[in-house]
Amino acid sequence: MKTLSRESLLKKKELKRVEVILNEETGEGVWVRQMTAREKNNWEISQHKKVVTKGTRTGRQVTYDLQLEDYRAKLAVQCVCDAKGELLFKPEDVEMLSLNMSAADLEKIVDVANDLNTITKEEEEDMVKN
Image 1 (cartoon, rainbow, N blue to C red):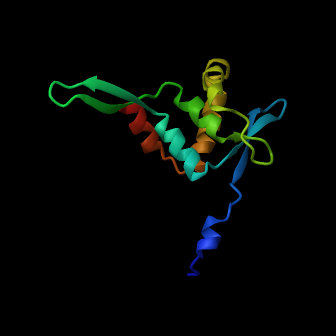
Image 2: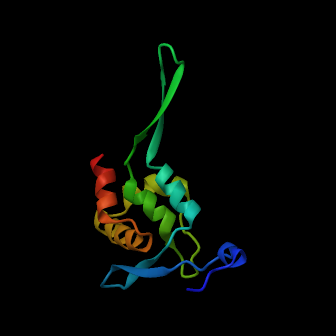
Image 3: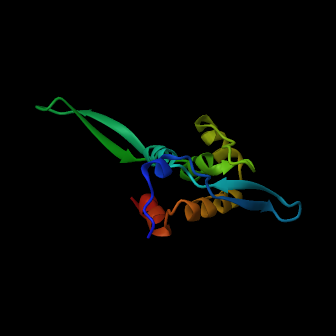
């Protein structure tokens, strides 16, 4: 095994991209890419909602509840890109994307995004189940 250097590890890498055809008749589709570590962290954090409650003796207590609303759209926003790998959406696009895109098309994107970002079906099901 060849050991990578610090410089090699810190150098920006090209993220893998896959074309996803959404309309077979017209050939229209999108590119879906891997997330950076920070993008994946942000996506995972977006699945949780901060809950602050008042405790009797302890003051405020902070917990985090799993919030799966727009799960698929949030993932698509972090992964749909142009042919050069630049993201097409901003975080504020999640709601409109979720409201306007068909579930079938969004699921095609999510399936590829899961594969590219090593999100297993079990992890996805656990998030949805919990």
